Length: 376
Image 1 (cartoon, rainbow, N blue to C red):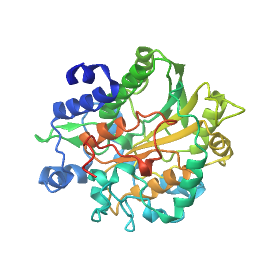
Image 2 (image 1 turned 180 degrees about the vertical axis):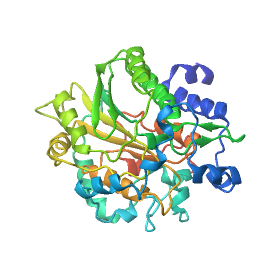
Image 3 (image 1 turned 30 degrees about the vertical axis):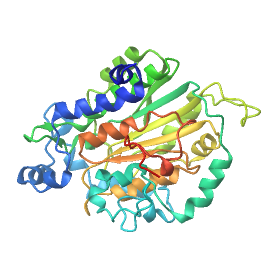
């Protein structure tokens, strides 16, 4: 079989190719440093202008940010998880330490506002002595590495803040982040369906709380019909209640039970892909986190995060939001990816979620390079 035939038949080859093609179609600047230094981009970043598609966009800027009194009141009432030692794991923190590369060399420090551009950041949570013991424990509890069906819960943020700062192409054409996220989701779901048609997908929309929109289905076209019909409009949100999300999942999902879990594969696993797009709103638990603890106690529940944020600055809360996601990963089994306003990275990092949770390595040990290994 020729290499060209392999690329067309194997999803692992076709997914990165499809992502690259979409990035070329949009002709996006791949270096955010070039883009952020341009007068046009600085103007957009200050004014928060977006593509005039959704009617409720005009009022979103007034209700978003640290100065929002409503958001401040909500923040006082919400239990925000805290992560000890998160500076080594959080790419927005000053103490962030990149992982050691395959060659054994430690990459130079990366400015936090360019962390999403670095190859060294492909693992998100990187080298941290504090979690080495936890990683060893995870390795000792390996489950059978089987491609069993996945029940994938896609949680999509519909706050108007998601579209406040657009993606910008070389000719300064603006693209709404939500549109690009849905297009990357289309590639992801259809590729997963090619890998295993038994995978099922459910849809949850994120406003101030979680709304379960679509039950599990393996019909990809049905799933995307619901997705398109229910995501045409965004709305202003003062906060997000994580309790409502985990309560919904616990209510809707039956987690599998296997007696000899080290030998027998489960009939399926449950994976949540949490797509969050707010840079000024820290998610928290309004009514406790008992449901989250119950779900996390199952070895067959996985919680991945796809964080699409504005360029980090002193005026937003990207680091604090990311700390919450780190805290949710109590078992060190999550993949947590953050993406700035860079379309190439948006599609590449979405493709990094294609791997089956029972077959992929833990994120700090994952390598997504397509380069052949060098001589030993």
